Image 1: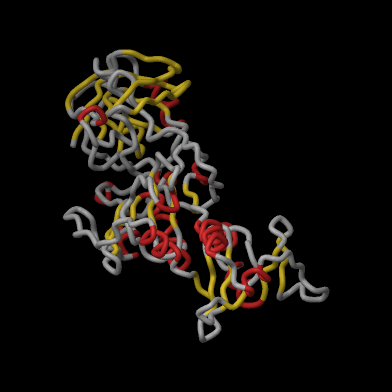
Image 2: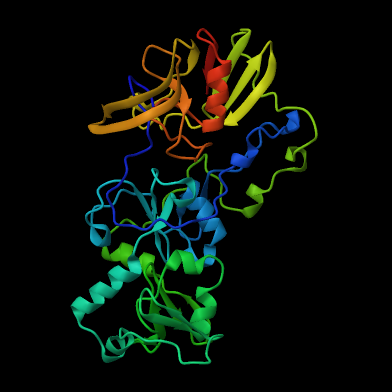
Length: 394
């Protein structure tokens, strides 16, 4: 937060979406891990460029894409705030289309539930119903149960009244596919093009001529139908081309038994000093010149001047155990209750504070304040007295 009372990465969307639990690599494990000083500059990228489709993948979307690349497919749009097509009625939040699915970011959910899949499978089925059902699809929509004795090759999904069988079952149960695609909405059936397909809540699986089951490129199809921009973008200068080796720490960056990353060191030479780096999205706390705490943080998104964390030399000017923060930026009103461990460091309303509404530290997320993990904020609140130096560097 900041600029009087800024903060929040977004408001709770009023979308009827079920968030999915995903394994994300949020680098929170890096908090408080001592590392060799020579490796202090290394960090995994939070945004990459995917040359196969000419688009970028970022943050939590990148994490899920790396975990389930075959299910998602490569990104076919940039992150957007869609208002048309299958996502009509969604007037806030970030959505990105991949070849087979569409992802949406839910900042107010628990960390493990902040990425959800849009119901593209359900929406495609509804569109199909409007256009008129084929006889095969009409039969596939009838409630069905597995025959006795087929436990190994057939699963009843009682909630939807359908089954998943054979090679479709094998694919559905691989990785996180069951959780991500959701329940079946039909039985498998022969589509008009001669392939066998099955509808699920978040996507469609189809069987190839070789018998393998793979996702239908429903994300691309839906994005085209919604007239979204699928044209490749030019690779940003500061964004690397995706390579999994980018996420492997160099040998010198592996944890060692002793020695903190020293960071940039105190900037003002104060007895106690907090240094925040915008480029590294990291905070260091020094006492008598020695590092006593380090953490990833989230500074301002810098989309407009009001959401930019001010670079310069500051100091803690006021502290509050908790505050309700609200305001309007670029015509958008926000309100966040009970923001904890608030430590203002300038007269513009910018503060270091605890953050319970997201865990995407290491990525700019705020309206100008410095978002801290809750445990780090609690420690900082007790350690940093009024007058403690705060330096924000680029």
